[in-house]
Length: 116
Image (cartoon, rainbow, N blue to C red; front, top):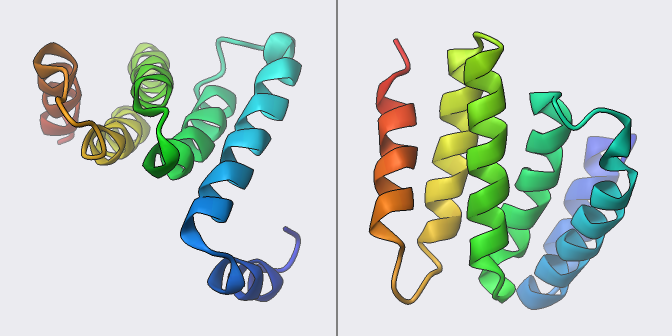
């Protein structure tokens, strides 16, 4: 949204599951257009961010995978702050899992701890 106030009003009036569903649709649309540059952590991170917002509606695994992918790309680019941010979002998504994957949780936590 071009104007944060418009975005905030719309978000506050949407039921949580409807908002999560819409974030999932935005992520899918961005994913289709991602062929431009799949190595850019900011683009991958944007998809991950929408998937994390959609994780409450069910697709936790995709949110975690995309968050890890964005974090790995950010680390390769030398952007440890962005990597930690993506990893923290992945941990947020993992919180919606009935049985969180311990290995992925450890990886995400290690990336967050690597932030200076």
